[in-house]
Image (cartoon, rainbow over all chains, first blue to last red; front, side, top):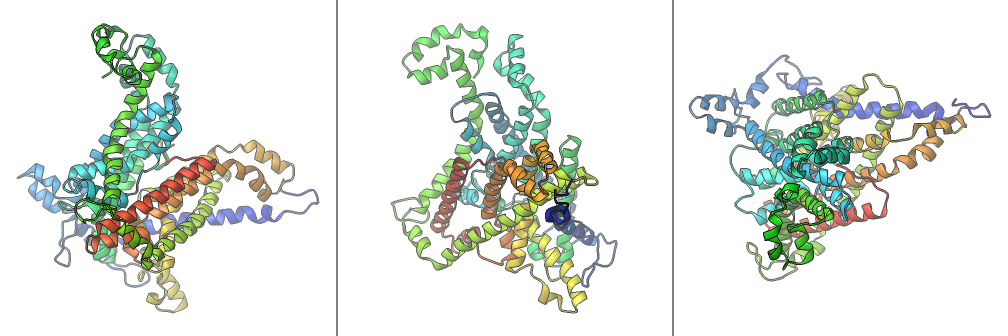
Length: 297
Length: 314
């Protein structure tokens, strides 16, 4: 098939596929190899030569999880040990002590807002035709401002509020809203929205009831995967957290930054690996829902 | 809010009609809709309202306050009008340099990322690869990694104790410290690509999925070489996706901050914003820089969407 009428093979028929495949393999290795190396190195005692050595050691994991002390005075761990110690005495205060649960909680707050905000607008754009629909869609699916700009705007507009849980939650929700809208939209686009709505209405359901009881449950998959993606991205948001964070347990991304800047290479590898484990769990959850990775469509 | 929507609740109308009669027509139609078209309008508004409220409270108002302080005469309260911060911006040669760095670096990394992502999307879509689902999952994994982690990934590969650095040093018999490029401009370039390739790939896979394969097969069987087929048949079809990916990837490049904070190889705009903020809290200057960034990206996006066939999403 690749032969030309004159019987000669074209250059691209001979080299095109190997070239594209080479780029593909290089890209794959480039993206995946450091993740694997980091994960493996987090179980090494140290890494001074060409390869890490002293397997299998959980010392660095104990350190970042907060079950063993750091070498220097500062504590950049997840403080899970401290949390477990406080748990019997004061369960409410315990979870606030660790970056892990603070981030889990903050990101969940962001997702809650995203659900209220993202599902209706995705429906409006998918179901109705109105003036300015295209532009509204563009506003909803494009991030308005990046984390660092929004952070400065927050510092200025809400000086007291911006570093609190509430400020972080609101900021996360605006930053990650596009992902929710896109994920839900892809579910809506696969549905016969008009028919669905008209059937429910003709059977006597009010419009609001139709939306809540018929339309939303049918888009469950998109909504759940949107929620998972938003949650993971909010938990990983660094730029915004870095600008507005002022007190309390560090959000997860700042825990990573503290380790990357201050800890030894192997300890940082363990800290970053904690994050990988979290994202792997999220990816698995998305996989079970039928998504392939973080794609929203 | 939607009680009046239900067909059964019309009795309400009798006492709300006289009051609402005094309102302008457009408002009355929203408060007490009579036609189905008015009701639909009200529904659309109700559906968009939560998002618009969030965008106003968390986006527009803070950004407006930021723009206000950038032209303020005082540092902690917005009073008076002064363009000192902008004059500072225009005359400061370090900032001019940062702006130039940001632009060429963003364009160059976007170009490289799009090339790598196009080839990867092409291979995923057109070739039969083993364990394709797993490959897609692996390739999309880095999308969720923040910039600081991308920077650490480059340290793992190319830092002083990095894998590639040490491997090359071992073969070449040179010092690993001399070979490490992670904290240089080259390392930063690669770190940018680490963040941007998976994002571009996500968008391009969507475009590739919609390519008409019959047209490609026809071109090939009529004797066109793979390169010609790609250029004349495939490329025109993925062009909207490619332009959309260019806009979004370039925006990503301009917004990168954590990566630069960790690797510290070059001063880009976002880094300078943080720098003037953490050195003496020069909020007016920082706000002015953020305004410039915002206006530039907004203009770039709006023009891009208006004058090209770009498809966006994400």
